[in-house]
Amino acid sequence: MRYEVRALSPDHLMTQLVLDAQDEDDARRQAAMRGLAVAEVRPAKGLRVPTALGGATARQWSLVLFSQELLALLRAGLSIVEGLEALLEKEANETARAILQRLLAGLRDGKRLSVVLAEQPAHFPPLYVGIVRAAEGTSDLPRSLARYLDYRQRVDGVRGKVVSAAIYPCILALVGGAVSFFLVGYVVPSFAQIYQGTGRSLPFLSRMLMDWGRFAGAHSASLAAGIVALAALLAFGVRHVVRRGGVGRLLAVIPGMAARVRIYELSRLYLTMGMLLEGGITVVAAMASIQGMMSADVAARLRLASDAVQAGTPLSDAFEAQGLATPISLRMLRVGERSGELGAMLTRSAEFYDGEIGRWIDRFTRIFEPLLMAAIGIIVGAIVVLLYMPIFDLADSLQ
Image 1 (cartoon, one colour):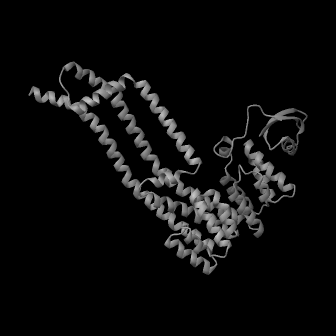
Image 2 (cartoon, rainbow, N blue to C red):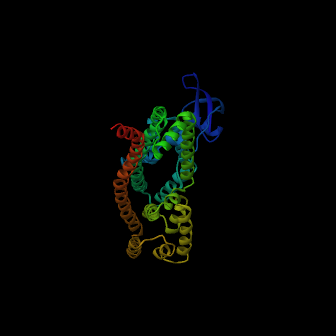
């Protein structure tokens, strides 16, 4: 949490600052590291540190940026303590400074880097802690950080393709819905008043559209509020499903998507496990580390596969028995087991399926976007045609 600290600066001036600390002793230690004589420490009113699931703290702290900067400093020849001190000197954000100060304090107390990272689980996930712990055994932290950055780049690349492919259809659907709502809520009621004064009978579909238009015009505010509430409820539901990891189950319901979702999950499994194995982590430890990142079904299968591996079963056979391998990845796994490069083969399997997912996304967007445009055009065109059908009938009668 955050603490308000009143302290005396080296130039004998009373200053007040807010620190992100684990407890009051931690806040006092951080203030002392800045050369301040602490007079009072108390919890900051109305302030709290948000969780790592989307609060301000999570947005202000970038693990990827931290890893990139630390990797550059380590490759330049600085030690881990010197690198963290350099990052602390240039950092202006209070949240990031507090994290770096806790890291430095732990290292100066004689703790290992992995232990200090594990003490801040909101900012350093278990996967990151695991690769750092493995790097401490091989004394090759820069290589492990580079491997983690490459892993994040691959995962974010696939996620970015999915998000990019969804942006244009969402905008198109939003604009099409807004145009349709404008036509039905504003234009159709105006036409309904005109046709009502003519005393002529309207075609059945046009009459239904006019009735709906009069209803929408009379209750436009209620309908708009209902649409906004429905959109908010849908957004809340989607966010809840995403947090609980149920996106895969929802997409699997769509015809033809179940196989793609499975390939995507297997790709993440292979990529993560390959990175851990290449970093020096054992097969069983790697499988235990990534269970929390997978969906419930894949995690259950992974636990059974881990039990089989501990019993002496080769990884390829355990994955095959639990449905965690495709024919191509199974062959690559067996080659990796024979050559002793299992981690590299898992990474190559992930690369193969990432390419397949990218090609499928491209094909899907090329087909879906024109279909969506055609559907919106048909809806808007149908509204316009139904509006003008009585005019066409009137013109025919006059002729």
